Length: 380
Image 1 (cartoon, rainbow, N blue to C red):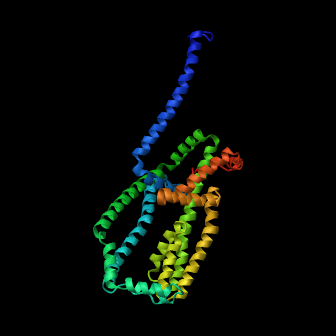
Image 2: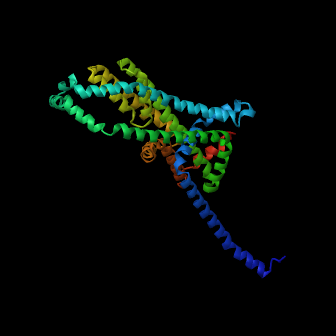
């Protein structure tokens, strides 16, 4: 053993400092390299992992209550399996219903196309009564779309390669979506089973990386998921139900599928008007001008209330985000990641705003709230 005054020991202690710093840098580089390599390996399944994480976070409060009421012996297998199958059924049933409806209506669509080939598309009676532009547009319609020969040429160009190409593209896309859906459910099962332990580990990592603000950032991101699911999905589906009553009152055919389509489109910002404006044009083409005005006006009212009052409160309060950043996160996320961006956009914005508040010293209120809030056993 060397004494404290031994020069050889002192030299070794001094020489060990650069090696320790070098080891730290090496660990960071190795961790970053392995992380990038893992993302590259899993890049085709990132969407499945992200969807599973979003669904698990959104449903975790309900799952946590079910877990406390479930017998302990079945919590590791049967409860997560039942929850996963329930989620899969809720997602599959509407798709199967839509596929059945499409198959049922495909025969009518083919007959309608054949009718257009033989008789053309007659101009609606109301078109010539539109001021200024109505008469000339009606004449153009009769000379082009109402002419069977012109319609056959137009349909021939549109559907020249449809049977083979469209079937191939649709088949590949359906198989790809089914694979992603399968891996989403598989990942969701393990998240339900091991979610509590995983959340604890992620909380430790966030605290090591971000320090004391790690828990606050994590809570804001989780709040963004909850608020987005409630503000976009549930409010959008509610819009479809409410506007569906207007469809029924106007006498539109296929009210249930049309209301379901409106609800799905309403999940996307500014998507619902596509459905009820289309319904209004259908009613107007059939001479029901009053019903068309009523459907469009009622739809605009519902969307205005939902987008300007309900959604900002639900999403902004849950994620503690100004509505401008919520809207930008949603629209930017959709443009970048597609449908998945509806949820990823607000989550990223919540993390950025939380870090901004932390760096600018505006997070003291959140720290006080976290410090005084009672601790719960559930992680989310």
